[in-house]
Image 1 (cartoon, helix red, strand yellow):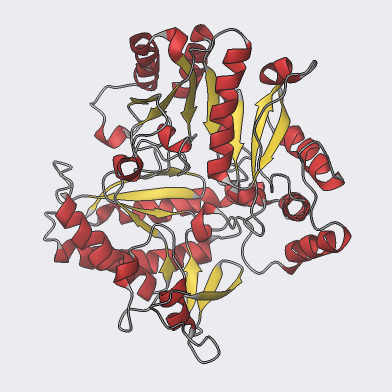
Image 2: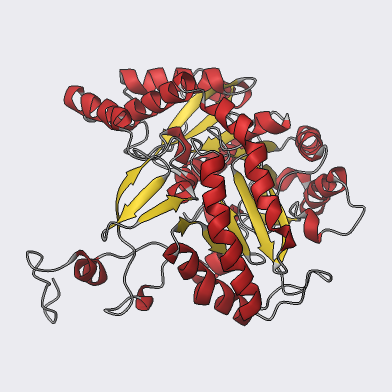
Length: 463
């Protein structure tokens, strides 16, 4: 406690008072909350819904943060963690192993495509990306190519917030406060086909990766990192043979291909891994979130036999790790989560319902403010424009008014949790729990349509 401040008496204080005084929320303008502006406090979840401290129900159209894939309130998943904690609450994976980490590694490897047979556990997504980038550098160094350190990523891409992962993240506003960063980040165009010149193909966009490698020098580039469907900017799917061409380029230039699937794995696109949905074989998959459906924190890096080969024998080790990577309680929760995926046919449910979800989202195209609708599986977005014919977007001040001044608060007030984002052009994103179906899609539409219509009127959007 500061010597100049009086601590709040927690025995009499409300959750609001305690939160305003002590809790520092992530990516949050803390100055926006005071006695007149409540912090949203979620206290309970059940299925596709969550409830706040006042008992109000909300449809969780974002799976919390692309995480709670099997839905909220699963006592069986929680019980798996509790049972494990009674037996072995924790032991490290630093030079030791325990049964749950071993079993989960084998299970994940069995689900992963091709020769991705080695699993390195982390506590979350940024740690997984950090691990993949460090592994890429050390792998090339062990093979006599120490100059291969650069990382190629796409415009507006988000790959985490740790200092190394920010090298790959291509959102200037997230990087500038912490510069200078780890050197080596290289940017190529993303696959926003709504704003790509007409006639551009997936192969054309993929070839920008080859151009970047040539420009930087093939002996300096370690890896390419890409999400199957890019999150930041609003759910950009890959066009045509995009990833197949990126794979060819990586092989040609001895560059590691990292598929960042922190969001896109574990059923979000209707497959265990997004690369399976689009038919490409990466060298590394980074993942987290849906691995445990967020019932416990856990991430993983899934690595090919080829990249593991230098570590297979002798005295070489990957000089990297995290205390809680492979935590036995998280691993037990992940195993129970994957049991639920199998027993409840979660992937089939996504495949069976994604067309209905897409149809609901596409129905919003008639609104003047909706310029584009895109996405795959249970991961979709609408891009908002001020002129449908010219695709004119909103400037920074207009986006502030539109998103933070109206849409974010109004959508939540009407009972829908989703994401209003302007890291690229303004978008509304939805990624509901994978247990959702037509009933929940209709509920989403009943909120989205009137709120977006009112937003268009407020912003004087031209039809």
